[in-house]
Image (tube, rainbow, N blue to C red; front, side):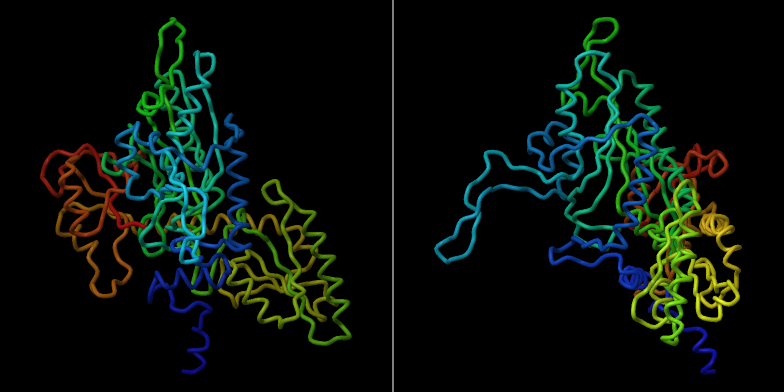
Length: 512
């Protein structure tokens, strides 16, 4: 019995099935990704976590530039009057805004610092940049010849979050926001769909996430947008994470910011605009989609290190030879490429035990661990462990074979993680044809401490906002998207809530 318990011991406590929210926080801590700041709702992103974000940033940035976009930067502070120009937009963000009302500090009579000089106009700390970027575009655009404008910025934003959770919801977070202006509605709509496709490719082939894409309902769309398109990922507690959005803004923001151009016919017209973005929430999504009860599991394409080599040096007289062998193998592996980049290899030379090193890298999610000891030198072989397999699963592989096969092994890990996420999503995306089954699907057996339950429910909905709001109140379930994949939800039917006609099924889920 004791032996069985030892075999079942994991690095992360509690396990996913025991308490998923606490498991998530434990994985973040064990992988040394981030920690809470003393500023409520904000986080410190630590080097390993930031390295993941840098890789996401680099790979996405290339895709943006390959589709004709350039990077720029716009101010962090937005005059209050700019937000007021678009009524729906300001209403959507009002509760989340951080407001600067003073500048300069002075020492008060009590000896404490206090704000001294009121601003002539309050400044909003950037929650999103449509309004201030629109103000620049209104100066830059005079003629149809000035269009399109295809810009992106990498920045931080602030949205005052009442229930923060590292990476998923924080008051300040990192993101990119694309903002484009076009001559015609068709061009702007094509841009909106193009960028949704760029995100889809990134999530599927880089992050190993099998997302569902589609259009948001009116109540869920971006404030001020005509249409919002989204990518919804299913994580291991069967909830949804909105992993990215692309917005067709029509002419709403162009009219608010007075972005006008002289058309080919010599007539003044308002431009058509779009915006689109993803954030550090993607890291939280990765954690919850792929990780296990031993810690973080990373798709190789966004792993800061592809391979970690762990020297096993039980005796001082063999230590130099083992370290030399590790360094030589590392150099040979770095000469190999994976998806057009040199394989990222680290030799762990820290003065701690081999077992501690192995567990550290397991918890950090490194795709491949390689152990080399004195006996391995004689046989020119190493013990190799894949992070997508149980931690006790290891193979003895000759060095030459490992060097030759490393790119293929990494690709197989990448493909395996995508296949797992796809199978999990398909298994837990369930057609629902009656209201009772729907409510049972989303109701936990233990209301005090809900177990993992639910998933993506594919149900007919008549389009009535009152029905949508009632489900939100009853179950904390929302319509995540109206899917654009005919294979998922194309057939017409009857709304299971109102009995009215429905054009297609939509995706309902609980979400982060």
